[in-house]
Amino acid sequence: MPMEQPDPNSSAYRVSQGWRRLASLLVQGGRAEDVPRRGAFVNPPVTRGSTVLFPDLAAMRETGTRSHDHELVYGAMGTPIQHDLEQLVAAIEGGVHCQVVSSGLAACTMPLLAFLSAGDHLLLPDSVYSPTRRFASTMLARMGVETTYYAPTIDEAGLRALVRDTTRVVFAESPGSHTFEVQDIPMLARVAHAHGARLMLDNTWGIGVFQPFEHGVDISIQALTKYPGGHSDVIIGAVTVAENEDWRILRDAAIQLGQVAGPDDCWLTLRGLRTMAVRLERQSLSALRVAEWLRGRPEVARVLHPAFEECPGHPFWLRDFTGACGLFGVELREDFPVSAMEDMIDALGLFGLGASWGGYESLVLPTTGGIRRNIPGGIPKGATFRIHIGLENVDDLIADLEGGFEVLRASSAG
Image (cartoon, rainbow, N blue to C red; front, top):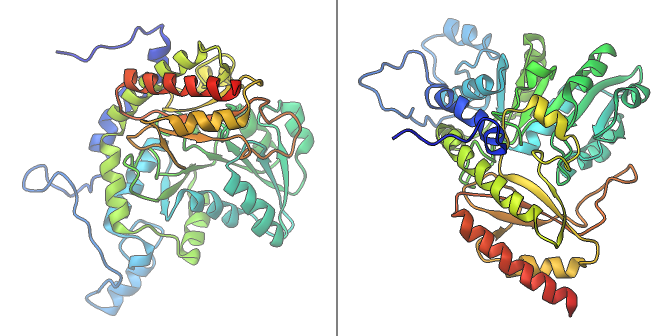
């Protein structure tokens, strides 16, 4: 029996269509070309090692010239399973090369180190992931790189007014961390390129449903820890580039910084990618249903899901994305204190309380107090929390939230 498909005019179709399109690539991609169709395991083996042996000096020297070519040179420069993973991530993102690194944060910071120098200027969205913000205000500042924050909803004229002759990188994160503003990426690319700067994008939320290089991005960043790993048991990241010129700069930085991921982490991530399309089709639809239910609750002021009109940048999501994932934000009415929200969260049974997201399990995280802004007006007025919807039964999740709202009201009244 064929799988039932949502109505092409429905919101369910809008959030899930991209995952169906991606399924064949995820299953078939990232496999060594010389692996035969018969007589080999479906999954590639994990090869652990540091030293690579060569038959003679000539072979050793010749291989050493291919450190940019995803070749086996030395364990700290990547293993065969890492190269398979890099091939698949590059294909998903639509780039020419990918560098797998040790974590999602390393994926954010390494390209900044690679492409910025003392005296350069960086533009960061005010909604950026807080560890990226901290890296800019500490390590980059000590290196002599100056950072200016811009509103994630800024228009073209406003952005152009912030660009300097020394601006070398415009950084984007879309949707924004905790507050889910969807950015106008083609506009950011247009402004960055007009001034000789590169556009970097943290595309972790949009992996598979936003094609960064089709919209002008130069360098795309992924926390593969999230949906690619998919099982909350790996820390790993990736950086993909659109041009070979940028690849050489990025790869040189990775080698010099010793950025690599362990073979077991790469293997787990590659295995997770095989099922990402079917997981995300289910999780995106479940998240939409939970978000729509929350949208109708009298306790809720806003649901910050890019598929909803009230989410900042919603038109850009409609224009540029082919789907959504299972992560979104909730803002309560202002008359509910933070303490009542915290009591609500503590009362939940199916939602785990913890950082990160992207696994098979549902999570909740309070975000009030964790949202930092340099520009006035970016912090929600009501208490806020973030929800990640996993693979549990949706009715069970809604029932759990309904019980949480009972605690919220009782705690607020008390």
